[in-house]
Image 1 (cartoon, rainbow, N blue to C red):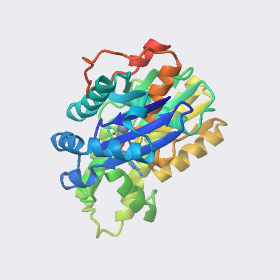
Image 2 (tube, rainbow, N blue to C red):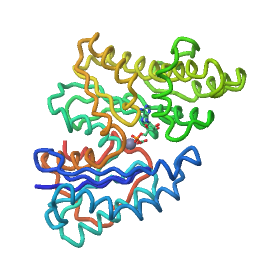
Image 3 (tube, rainbow, N blue to C red):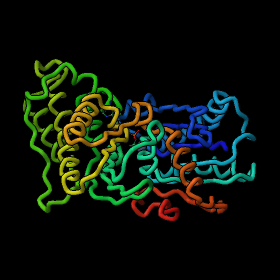
Length: 344
Ligand code: KG4
Ligand code: ZN
């Protein structure tokens, strides 16, 4: 059994083949960072055009690394949403074409659910119940999972996502796109205690996140103190802002853990690549005697291995793949009412 996964929800074109034991036989991720960098963020029209140009080469390269031909694939998996609609449609149409031509099943997956699945790619022994925090450029949400593929949304961002806040500050300071990895590197040279940012707080006691207040406070400081690369406290500023984002994420997770008493804590999504976040997350889990689970950095950002893995998981649970080639992409969040509900 070999599943070919395809991911094109934002600005990464990715293909991956997994065997029935979740072993990755081939995995290719082509980023479009250079295309979007001059704009300081993803330009949807450019993203979908680039997916169209790249997808065939990415799939070919993935199959060649796996030493397979298209005929050797038993099922196709593709991200259906949420994401940029034009980008999603490229992957979905391509996967539909393959499924139709080869007469093989097509399994569509939810992008946020696939991010959570990325944790299980390398560690299949995560105890339940678990709390899963997905922090990326488009999403910041926490789910309570009583068991595998069972999600209860317990908090989500009301405005910006964590990665989006990092990207915007980077853009404002002219540091490049994506901002998360740049700030990750530069912040290492600074003192995270130099600038104090308040912890976002929901007055209604909910476990939702908010990053727009932090972003506005940071922008205000940048203007007032004229923070730029030449400023003596430039690195301290970045380290302090990065730490404010980390504190906001972990304070929320700590509250959720206290309320829901999970056995494991899952951290995934692009922001989970952040070195300091990974360190503080693991330290927090250890102190609470909870099992921490974070994917390797390469599986935190968008990739098709998590897409193929989730499809495989669904097939193993007995989900009948859809033969409906009328399937459409969806741009907005669907979890916890994701298609996976069918397989519980
Ligand atoms: O999961 P992802 O590839 O795409 C979405 O689903 O949104 O996440 C991309 C986000 C971007 O905002 C990027 O700045 C952030 O992940 N990111 C990081 C790091 N690497 C990527 N944020 C902080 N530290 C990093 N090392
Ligand atoms: Zn993502």
